[in-house]
Length: 210
Length: 104
Image 1 (cartoon, rainbow over the protein chains, first blue to last red):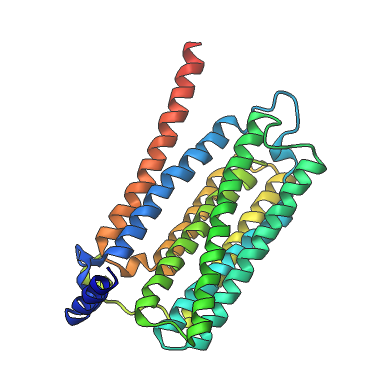
Image 2 (cartoon, rainbow over the protein chains, first blue to last red):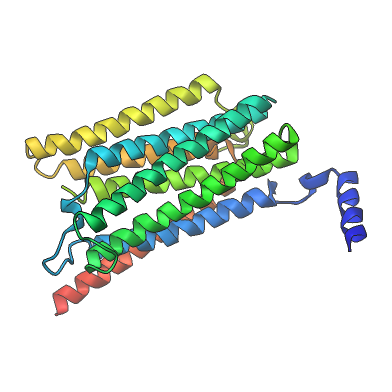
């Protein structure tokens, strides 16, 4: 089996490597990632719709929009927005052959993502323990925790992917051209998580608290 | 987007930083709008303004940070397809709730 894989890889190398695996002139991995992200719109679209429908259904208990800490969430949003900058700089560094820069910006992105996650954990802790708003308190709180919780889970997965790229780059002394495509895919995922937060921040926090 | 756009050079480090500063400023304006509406009633104008600013950030991140404006048009169609479907889903759910409220 291993021989077969090696033979297949050698055959692919003879014919230009991964460039052969394209559909519509686009690398299959990139096309797959864009299609996946497109489907994620439906996933988050359903959760945002759910929040907008049930956001006021509180049965007289605590209302999520009355306890939002806008200054705190604004800083979290700024942190995630800046992580998109560091992510694109990591990819840009690799494209110009700056392996040190790639590692530095990758680590910075993972750190900023972790800060955002820390902020979300703090926010959830306050909502549950200070304000008594938990997942099952009312339909509004369920919708809020489902939406922001799933977004947080996506950020956590992104941080793991970033740290794995960073570890790989550190162990090997840099990322190869083929691994560069994988970094681009991680970058696409990370920016997508950022644009979903742009929507959540506006729709849930700013508009929701008006 | 033409094939020329596909081969257009990607932004430089300085341009990426400028885009990030622009995004940060727009975010600050959004938060300021929130507080302005609390102090002075904006008669419902804050909602549309916040949505426009948010959509602007959304497009800038997709176009420049995700490089979609430098990619083949097919990717834009795939991506926009998912977004339009999500908007359609929202419209159907809200519409069905409104119909339920009217006929109740």
